[in-house]
Length: 127
Image (cartoon, rainbow, N blue to C red; front, top):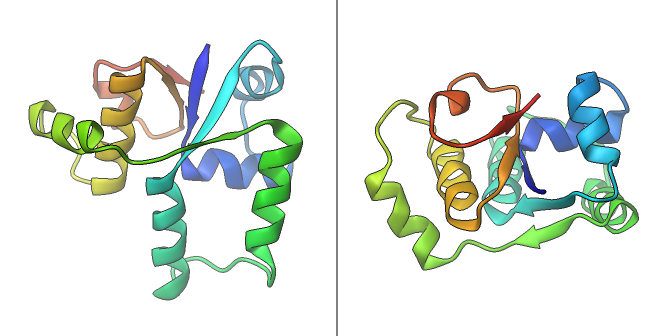
């Protein structure tokens, strides 16, 4: 299964706590292909820049190493992903989450997230 990791799922996986048993099992299942969206990276950077999120110095390298060790693939934002947002019902207003939903739908992925608003969409969620 292809799984798109929400931002908080990656941060909790790095911290080693916070993931549910189901999410942890899906994360460690070598049959699954894990992805992290450029949208989530952008979200991290914005939250750091406005003081809403604090990460330790060198977080970029920590994240890169974590991705490499866990085989997490980078998911770029394609124009088709952005265009498919137009067809999404407005059940959730967060632009980053709406893009993750559009990406997951376009790429036939589940989303690992605890966000109950995302679960309202026609996309499989894992938590």
